[in-house]
Image 1 (cartoon, rainbow, N blue to C red):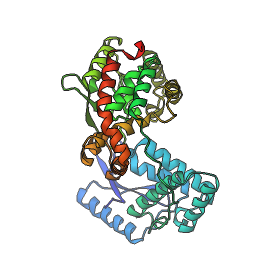
Image 2 (cartoon, one colour; image 1 turned 135 degrees about the vertical axis):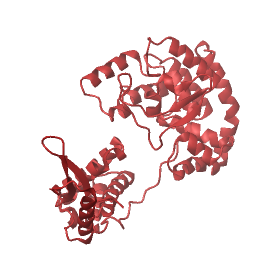
Image 3 (cartoon, rainbow, N blue to C red; image 1 turned 30 degrees about the horizontal axis):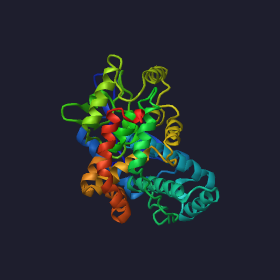
Image 4 (tube, one colour; image 1 turned 180 degrees about the vertical axis):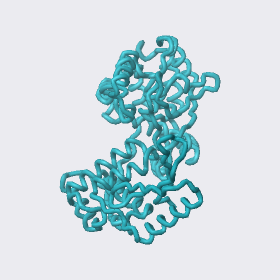
Amino acid sequence: MNELVRLTTRPSRNGKTFVYRLEYIQDGKRKRISLGHSDKHRAERQRKQTERELRMGVIAPAKMKMSDFLEDSLMRTGDQIRGSTQDVYREAMEHFIEAVGNIDCQRVTLSHGELFRQRQLDKRNTPATVSKKLRALKRLFQLAVERKQLHENPFQFIKLPKWSKRKIEVYEAEECERILKASQEHREPLRWDLLTYVALITGMRRGELLNAVWADIDFDKKTIDVSPKPDTAETWQWLIKDTDRRTLPLTDEALAELAEHQSQQPERYTYVFVPAQRLERIQHLRQQSQWTLKDSRLKVINNFKREFDKILRRASVRERRFHDLRNTALTNWFANGMSEYEVMKLAGHSSFQTTHQFYLAVADDLVDRARAASSAGVCQNLARAWHARTFLEK
């Protein structure tokens, strides 16, 4: 159970003594009450008494406008959630306030949630987007219940809009060959061919690839680690989606290309796929305090989607996402006999339900299963042809 009252200390002016004080939230404001003594046991008894009063309602639950309620929640949660999740919470709350007003959090009811849901749908938001916002708000209210700021979650019984999940898109073997050939012709300044091939064999996300550093690659063990990056002189802060870290296998062809690519990089060059000119620009932005954690997900490479779309057009492949290279890798793993648990671990999914979608994409479609199984040999030929640079000679 979360503590509503914290016990802190306040040093005296001479710095040699201190007194205990209590800290808690009341009416949306942080309260700090000095106990006037330094007796630890006595202070803890006083803390517990104040805690009981809060939980029993002797001290009323906080009254806060919704905007203040959001900031209080994010402050309490701190760095336990990703910056991207905080952005989702902020956007959802902003739109909720637009729909119902900046009312007291104690006054929110299910009816407000239903009004918000309809207003969002009326604005032509997709059911999936509206569901995401409703889940974010529901989570914020649930945290407030657990912290005893609210007696109940007003969104506990909110109904999410009905919507069909998008079909998992994959690239077929011959499409992968054409994409890889086109990416060889479109490799400057980013090694698109190397990036594409590593995505196809590892199932790594775009952000994971672009934030990979040379220290992540073990050439002896033939693996690449997906690991969070600290904020240092050489690396910018970056966090992994869902899980902390994982290790993925690399093929001999990929290792050979990576070794050649590394030999062509400037000395002490950190990132595997970020071009030198772009890295210099990012470092400049960091020095000017103009680079954020969110940027490490979205802005490592400028115009990424536009350039990948050019590759697809050159390859005469129907426009899809770079992320679908990851989908292709995961479905191929299933088609070639890997278990759901194995794929879940390698893919870095935090939920078995997410992995199961890829399993169903293969298991429920006999035609797709046959195609994926027969493509195993084709993919081996693809790797050898790419590594031997035979595509451009055709």
